Image (cartoon, rainbow, N blue to C red; front, side, top):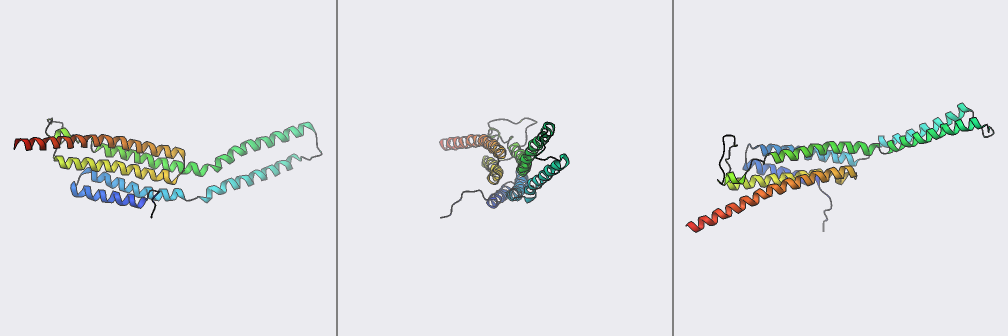
Length: 243
């Protein structure tokens, strides 16, 4: 029996493509379809970046080796210019040599730690930059459903001169809101690909923030859907009673 324990970027992309086709067929020319295209592009970009982040970059691994070689060479050169010998026990020479070696050890250790974590820091910066763009996309998705008010579609409220045009039926509004919720969920899944392929606490925290944001926004959308479904049900019951 097949076990699925990891997100598959290809399947996420296929799901977004299918969602885009559904939106195009249901709402041709709608801005939400364009945002779905942006989400699809972000998913493709994430697939490539995640694959790149998984790969070990050997150029970064060579830097600590080269640095250690340089430190050893510097230590040998320092011993030579100071002409330090074991037989030389003069206190001033010993103190100067010890201080020089200590300085090399301290600053060399700091530099070595930096070089050893350089690759991880670079991957973190790349992942956080991409996640920032995904966070912005989540807000854009939410913006497209802000004015979709069930009350206006159901005729419970009246438009003003500044109100946007309301041309959707109750059914179409329900589908629109459902598509928006799906997009938010998929955006969270795209972000999760970075946490899956990069074991970095800062990246994981950023992914969790995006998923939490998407979940909270989706919850608000489902509150609208619940209101819409309840109102439609009440209208149907009232219609049955009047017949």
